[in-house]
Structure formats: structure tokens, C-alpha cells
Length: 365
Image 1 (cartoon, rainbow, N blue to C red):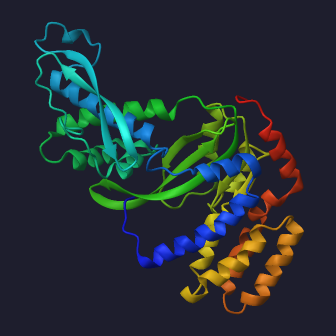
Image 2 (spheres, rainbow, N blue to C red):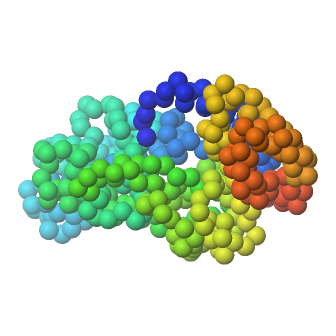
């Protein structure tokens, strides 16, 4: 996830940000989604959504380390009079790629436990964002998680120790993945992030993240799932059915970026949910079809489409855009035409009424 941003990407991001600002400020799903956009749904950095998940992963791994060191599980009677036992924990704050994270580091009575994933006097951890996403994703095998942890810990740690740590991490993640969720979410965002997965060889695999804005305006990660890139309606039906089984009865709007089969699956699980194509992704994908010298012009001409007061007005603005750019960039026209049905829901008067009702909802539905 940590990457070097090229000049090309930096310019592209600046153009996208400029175009997206007008959309989010003026219309995007009114009060609740505007709040989500302004606050940001970033995974990393100060206030990012991965901080609590990072804490869980690190503490689960540390629990595996202390279990291997003292030779028995927590609360196991075999640890009595063993010569060494657990002796509580101490709090420690480490700086990570996802912001400062406070973890509870276990101790032993003999004072011989030397934690490895968060070493004594270590104050900074790097590369944890990709590790946390990998270890938190449902659908990874024991072998894949074990291989990832083996690389994190290095050759100094035995295979048996890695197995013990893997078991504890999987146990901690299973508890997080099964936790109860809210009954209603105004907005759920689904996005894919490519993460390196290790199992004999290193390969990029998509990790799908469902992030939500709650009725009181807070943000949460509902779940993380590993994919292989060929996911369709069946996969998304399983994901959404899982969320429903964990308590999610309804979602006002689900925002995504053209994931195959997702709209059909949403309609099956939550028939009244509106599926909205992410405008930021749509603008970004459009710019990638254009020559660099046209980025600013194309983005500027797309703003009236995104910020139109109604679907009819947006259609008129898009026809004007097509007349101007259709011969030069037919791929951009096709991109928007294919995504049109999922792009215009936030312009609907019915949805605007629903948004107003959502804004008046009590803090907890």
C-alpha cells in the first residue's frame, strides 16, 4: 500500500480532487454523505479506519508469542506452578503507517519474554498497513496467513512458533469478522485494494473492503474479504448475506466502482438500496483515457454533468460533453454511458427526500 507517487499520478490526483470537490460539496448524498466525504473514509494515516484493526492484529500476534514462550494458553490450568507464567500487560504506543496505535504488550513473571513483532524500546513500525489488510481478510487460508507472518518475523522464529502465532491471529480476526453490526447504515462504500499475499510465492490479490458511515456520522469497517479478481454476483451475494446475518437490515445507498455482479446481489439482499457509482472513480477512470494536455479540460467539462440539479439536466450536459469530446475520446463516452444507471441515483428527487429523512434519524436506529 505504501507507494511512490509519480508526477503523472500526482497531476492526475490533483485534477480528480478538483472535479470531485464540486460533486461532494454540492450534491453527493446530502448531509450524511457530505459528512463522509469531508471527513474522509481513508484507511491509513491519522484518524484512518485501520488503527483499531492494527491494534487487534498486533495484540493477537503478541498473544501467540507469549503463549509459545510460556508453553500454555491463557487461563490454561497447566500453567500453574510451571515456573513461569503470564504477568499482565503493559501499554505501549507505536507509530505506524496508519497512525499511532496503543497496544497491550504481555509480560511474564520471570521477565524473560522478548516480544518480536513489537520489540522493547521500538517506537515505529513500518509496512503494517498491507500486513493488517492481509491478515484481516476473510477467505485467506491458514497457510497464506502463516506464510505472511513468517516473512514478518523472519528466519529467527521457528515454524512451531509461527503456527502458534497464526492460530492466535486467526482467532482474533474471526472474532472481529463475526461481530454484530448496526441495523441500518445510511451509506456503505465497497472498494478493492491490491495487496501482496504470500504462500510459496508473492502475488497481488484484490482485498475488498466494506466501509460504512453510521447514522450518527461515525465511520467503521464492516468487513474485509480476499478475492482472486474474478468475483461475480455469487461472491457479492455471500458477502452481503453475511453482513445481513450480522444484523444489517437495510442500507440507504451503496457506493462502488463497477464491481461485476454487485448491483444484482445488493438488490437480492437489500431490495430498496440504491447503488451509486463512485463519481471520483468515474472521473479518474475517464482521465486515464485522455491525453495529459486534456485532463483539465475534460474534468472541467464533466463537472456540469456531476453537479446537475436533476437527471434530465445531467443528460443534457452529458450530450453536450459527448458532442465536444466523443470523436476524440469515444472510450470516455462509453464509460459514462455504461455507468449511467448507477451514476445518476443521487440526482433523484425521491432519493433527496430519503436523504432528508435519513438526516432526521435518531442517533441509533
